[in-house]
Length: 508
Ligand code: HXC
Image (cartoon, rainbow, N blue to C red; front, side, top):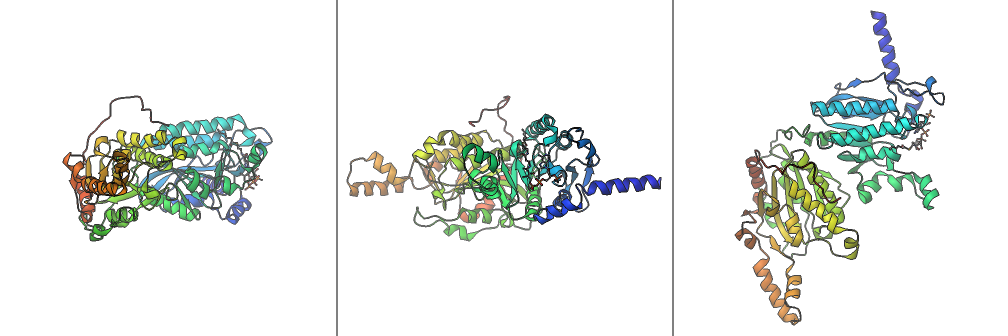
């Protein structure tokens, strides 16, 4: 018996070494952790239970039958983050460059299936040279098997991808179908075809970093959500992030005890809005003063920052916050902002996360660039997302809510549950000057100025909307947290269902 146990220990130790010490050293030299080191940081200490440690590839071409490494390039299993169950797979670059074989794919599929069965999030750590070249089509099939499970798991359990090394070719499409992607600066990249192919086909000379590094994907493309300086920072952020998430679409959002009083008043918000309507202010201040302990996990902070999306807590429970940012493009909705917020709203709705919307929006961004690139279709995404969402929706208009953007931003007409306005709110078809120039075309400058003042006096306030019941209450800015907390409490048992359908047809 003791012999057998000793043999098992040896087998385990071999498997733990993956592709060997030399390759582990080379991984460290690149500033990267190994697959197992990453899992150790990600999960609660000692909580990881590995499965399929002895799985080997089944390839017999190119002398592969001579080189079998236990685990076949991916470490899989489950553990906990702050005591809550999480499934994880972590590709091991020291084993055939973390490339995906048929068996490697089967291990990932098993994790996704197990997670769906019991209802727990999946975190995938990607560090891979793509399809296992020696296996050919078997590996491509393996990828498709993973894609299929990513899609089935979408909206059932939260899926987070951490990109911590190369992620090329079709390999990018598994992370792309998960809910959120975190990348590491200077050591991770994602592209469909690498710099060499790009040069051959288009003659462009571009580095890996420029083509698909963390900065490119978190600023320009929005393929990824947040970029971190190194593996450890990204893994710790993933722990924080998961703390906001329900385990599945069948669960309520998690609750975390907080010492922050639910009725904390923030007098400083009463003077936040500048006297001049064209002067910006930082909407982050409203968010941080509203949520528990000022803690806010922002999604895509470096992309389309004319809209802010992220997670906070109210009375310990997760909320999704969407907010126009007057500091960037005056808070206008453009294509990128609409796409960013639409996906965020849909995620919240899929996972029972109430949405708090803070509105200061002068409208959709005008211009040929926006029109010719399809602002109609992309703006419709956000409109669609808010309109279909059945989770509790609380909206606060702090200043401008003009035109179509008023409708879009979780208005009463899109089944907003509680629609509040600060006394500084201006709810109108458009800004006073623009409106008057259209209605009183041809009038003198003096007359225009007079009518503008008249229009402002009549419409630059929340009361016309309030008279019609489109605004439930005009609230004092300092009581925002209190009103939102109270509202969420009352909406806890909200029941609302959309008509049965196979699925909707959101404008893609
Ligand atoms: C098998 C691979 C591999 C792969 C790397 N290796 N990629 N083995 N299949 N796809 C092995 C290498 O042979 C090497 O083995 C070890 O991993 C480390 O690789 P290096 O090249 O030494 O590392 P590095 O210099 O860091 O370069 C990493 C890399 C490069 C940029 C990822 O290895 C690379 O370009 N690999 C090929 C990428 C690729 O074209 N993949 C297929 C994409 S097509 P030893 O034994 O020397 O340590 C695809 C289609 C999917 O993925 C479609 C799905 C729909």
